[in-house]
Image (cartoon, rainbow, N blue to C red; front, side, top):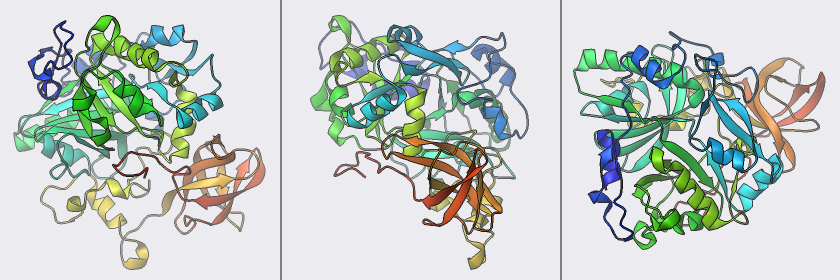
Length: 477
């Protein structure tokens, strides 16, 4: 379909004004937004209106704000706005700085807790347009991405996605977490975190320059600036999206499973059709749902079509507040808090992102940090390097444990630290995520957390805290 070819070639598709729902997406075309060449970081930064990229290995503070919803400012001291900014205000949003943008933390119609519950029982729409959308294409694209991540992209089916991590050479520390979608054997759609934009563009620019110098393979990297990205999450998500599809019988969302994507067109106001949008099944809440990448001129129209067609009884906007508690219940990491430059995938309980065919220590083309990460996969008890700390989930009695709270063992000695924590609206308990010494990580281990100077009982608990409901074709899993 044309959207796939558009993302591959850095072009965006635009429909004619015909209203025939059977019109082929393959007939639609128009140039995509301006490209960014990260091999020239200064040029990229100038086009993105971001501050100068940081160089070298950075601490977690590079993507971590002084307050939970804080972020770095643009060069002129202003924050960016997603295409949905005015729509958020119209729906009573309270805006806060996040990832260099003004983002909604909650809305006047629902409290954070109510919004959380509404997502789990109905559906919510999250603006994630502050995230950075990339396109890598060319003969060397797959090899490059397999160099900077531990992902196994060769066996990955076309129009499928995988969670992965950008890695530092030498240390195996996590530069950022990312989603990689394979559009073709030589074309990939990649999403990275907004708060790491400067660092990621600097990193990708340097790594691309080095890769091209050593390998000579052609790779084109573009940032899809101005494109919208919304997350439709909740048990009603499929029905809501199906209701605005131009050809629901052809799109067959029931056959689009978790981790797969598909280009579709939707009906907007006035009987017009949107340009093709990329619909990926998945999300950050643990619920069934979709992340939808939308060309710039259609972002508002598509979002309004979803809200107005579903109606407020089925679909509501949700902000960063509900998103944070939903993702923690789902056991999802927040970069700069639960993951950082000093953390390897094995320490972060993300060993599963390392492809089975990427685990050979003698591989001719290893990923960055493989010399550190691969030995960690084997515990010390079995002759490997193992790790000294592990990311775990905790259920905490009494007051909730917040980021930075110390975790202590039975002997009163510090064994770790909390990286995220909040009351769980779904469970009615206080939950947290953190790192503890190896040996204190097993489920059921009783520990204590220091909350406001008082010790609170904490039990190591398997994640996700709330069972995931991803659609995999049979039953929620």
